[in-house]
Length: 179
Image (cartoon, rainbow, N blue to C red):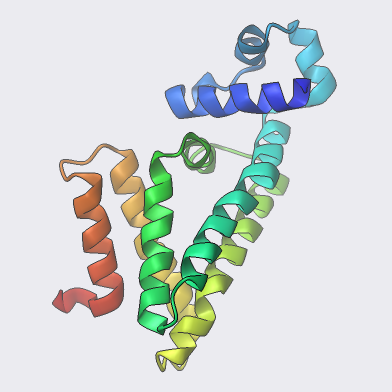
């Protein structure tokens, strides 16, 4: 229960204040634990990040996969892939990992994030192949680049509303620069 409380506090800190807010004193304060007790659960900020990724990323991936499975046509699957990821931007678990990905992490934590994203990208490869892409893996990585750019735009509080950014990303992915 303490570990779950620490992870929940870490999500809140990252969501509210970014990576600078994720400190062991802040975790201790949010959970009511002594600072030394936090070190009993996690040896470093990177360890907290790794655990957040291990716990939260499969949940988001399952949501994306479920949305895609509800569709039958390849284009609809791709649209569901993009929309679901962008809908998750408001979820504080997602905001926490976005904050994490922008921070300086050790190699192990970065590799876990890369692997998790690789699993997400793999979900869309088949649909892109069904659309006739001769390099569906490359197309999937580029498509994820559009999603990542839209996520950053939403996270930055861009002038456009999140719904506008989502529509632009879906249009870019499905129709390219022709709109």
